[in-house]
Image (cartoon, rainbow, N blue to C red; front, side):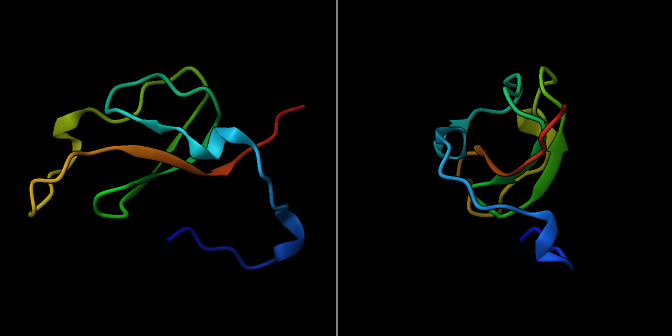
Length: 76
């Protein structure tokens, strides 16, 4: 789970970007922290860069690796 110390640096959002579940290697539409739906592993990815591939990590229960945006950054 992503951690933070000062809640003043974060704002809650209901943006649909947080509802999208992406496959390994997909290009990200938003810069931020992505969480694996199967095992809770987290990675950071910049907009336009691919998410880690299928062989980045493996699940002991053989569930599919799927990434969800959990913290988005806001550029200016």
